[in-house]
Length: 76
Image 1 (cartoon, rainbow, N blue to C red):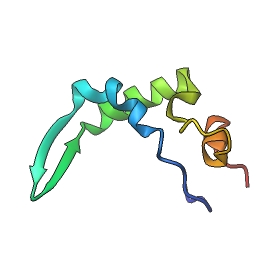
Image 2 (image 1 turned 90 degrees about the vertical axis):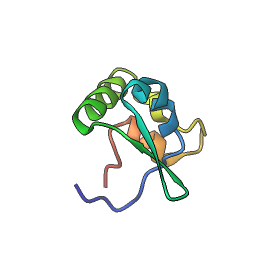
Image 3 (image 1 turned 90 degrees about the horizontal axis):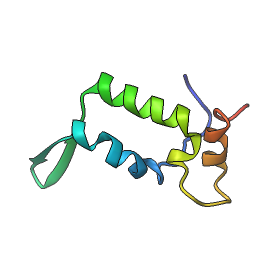
Image 4 (image 1 turned 45 degrees about the vertical axis):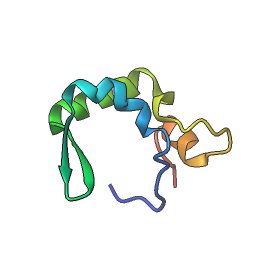
């Protein structure tokens, strides 16, 4: 779905421990690529966020993007 604003990605690393068993790493040139099987990673992440919506919140009390995401997305 198209949205008018971008989101905050500062809290996404909180998913790392959950997704670590699925992660494959590779060096491509000078860049580290982290690769995940799509269906498994999406299923795990979605279930975790549904069970605990604050999981990917960046932690800033002033972050409206994260507050909107916890509530289900911006309502515009």
